[in-house]
Image (cartoon, rainbow, N blue to C red; front, side, top):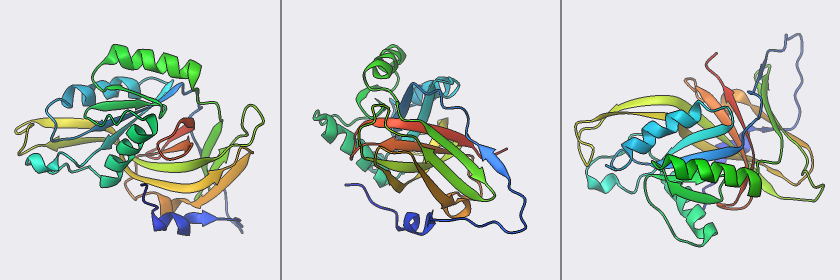
Length: 250
């Protein structure tokens, strides 16, 4: 079950009025994504470091939105993951339930919310990216920008003109984090993680028609936020049908 962050309810804004202000606009990078790759990983998992390192190569690809979702279910092994959230563990379980295979493990890469692969197996992930672009593409356009302290998310219409339903999520991202691990399976190692999701908040619903969601940027982001991602996702653990990315660090 997904937890709804009550803070998101306070960020929804229905109208914006700027008086005697000079608008400042920051735009998302052009949306050319073929796939969203979500890596479920843990600092307490000895099999995860190769997958964490591999994710960096996907971050550098303009056609892939790559995100790290640290899970907490290995914390009992002796090291508490410093980035983990139980909500990310629940997200991973929701994917397994939606697929019907019950497969939850680390490192696990989930592609477009539809299929999964061991997070360190590049060839399988690459094949999945190609397959998902053909079978389950990111077909809904998303434009993401900040104007005069307001975050505006434009979600385009369904490409086939049919009604749809999807949740619009905003992910707050830390681009990298280096951790010296003192116990557990990775004891003594210093590891670097990339595009770490620190908060994932539902901010609105999309119904198949063009729509704009307006948010107070300060209420959504953290003072040290590096970036934001937007995911448009059907159901709980369902397909991702649109995505956008925007750096916030200048």
